[in-house]
Image 1: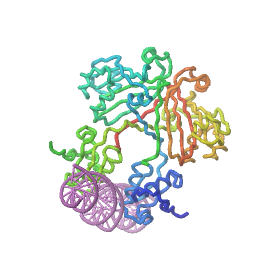
Image 2: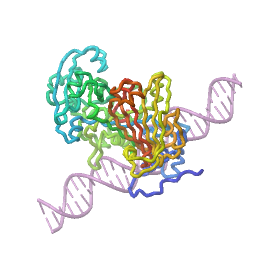
Image 3: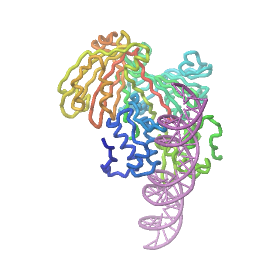
Amino acid sequence: MSMAEPTEIDDSETVSLHQRILSDIRERILSGTWVPGHRIPFEHELTAEYKCSRMTVNKALSQLAKAGLIERRRRSGSFVRQPQSQAAVLELHDIRIEVEALGLPYRYERLERLKRRSNGEDRTLLELSATGPVLWLEGLHFAGERPFALEQRLINLSAVSEAGDEEFLEIAAGPWLIDRVPWSEAEHRIRAMSADDAIADALDIDPGAPCLVVERRTWSAEHPVTHVRFIYPAESHTLVARFTPSQG
Amino acid sequence: MSMAEPTEIDDSETVSLHQRILSDIRERILSGTWVPGHRIPFEHELTAEYKCSRMTVNKALSQLAKAGLIERRRRSGSFVRQPQSQAAVLELHDIRIEVEALGLPYRYERLERLKRRSNGEDRTLLELSATGPVLWLEGLHFAGERPFALEQRLINLSAVSEAGDEEFLEIAAGPWLIDRVPWSEAEHRIRAMSADDAIADALDIDPGAPCLVVERRTWSAEHPVTHVRFIYPAESHTLVARFTPSQG
DNA sequence: GTGGCGATTATGTATATACATATTGAAACG
DNA sequence: CGTTTCAATATGTATATACATAATCGCCAC
């Protein structure tokens, strides 16, 4: 079977050549024309096919490799990778934005604030090795009159000492931290849980009712910054994640 | 204040020059040294700073732009972007892999299989405009002796007609589809729910117990392929998502 | 002033070239 | 027969160069 031709369809958009090479190849991979394990043409073959320099082909292939669609091996060539584990981009918006997107007035109310030295549980949550000052916060996010989410947060004051002077009475710590601490890494855990009495009371739902729990741990330059747990009544929240393979 | 110097620390790893330029700049952005809106040095300035060609600098800056950390404007320069919405990569593995990662034997068991013309609810789930043949499947994923997840799936037979001939008695439709239909887009919804009697019975948990629900809709070349709902008992599953800004 | 216009400038893309590096396959050798 | 060596090869990185394109600045005419 002969080699596939470069795209003849004119997108009527001026795209650069390396972009066209990239999307041609991506198309053949996603359509299944080139199955996982298939060796895609060598750079010098694509160079001939598209009548361009190797640098241009290289740019396209390097990007495909970075996107994880192909794997490149010296002396051997470039190969279509096994379908990678399905990964989706999960957008995690600020709760205020989420509530306002529903057309409801947003309000935050602090329930508890406690400055203390970290105990064992705190160190587990923050992945701290040594004890040190932390700030424990609990608060409620409201959508209109109804509780929208309960927030339980631990801040590592060794990393963000200024936070110790804040009251966080009516503003949540999330936006405050984002403005001050550039975070370089975050980890999320998402699970379901049934509300215990305290949570049910705070969220004004029945004890035992299902809740969605989103926990986030954040680091800035290797230092743990904060651990936060958002507890949503099941009715109030759905996370949405979209996936489109590699850069469109 | 004078210009920051190129990294002097030797990683004792040989990294390419454009990689070093990239991570130098990323570091200054993430550490807050260069705040959003700040104009980063022109290509020709970085060229002088790193004593390299413009192509090398350009490679680094282009990647930073693609990663969304900076914005480039002709004639004006490159600027640090406002902090983008927090996005995390959510890995959604095959259930068999998840179960086997726990060191437990995996087994799938079909509960129900029904070929029919799509009703209104089916068309909503698949986002179909016209009626057509669909396949409804319900099955249980086991980890050892215990039910791990309940799967409810709808397959659009207009898009994957071969699926109509499969029994899916002991193999789940997920892996089968992945091998045959290259999917180009997917949407996930994640929420908490309490088990109704049927679900509780299937999963061998108490009615009303909290469950994590992950729904996935998949398209291939604009055509809806399948809608699947995984229902996990709250104890059995936690989703993990990690985020590190731009390519490490 | 202000409206248009050309010069300037930074980025965008592409080329030809060069050398480095990893890996393979085959030849040479003990 | 196994091992070592070496040349061939595909990719990885970098350079100098060229021209295109978009945006801005400043000049000049009105």
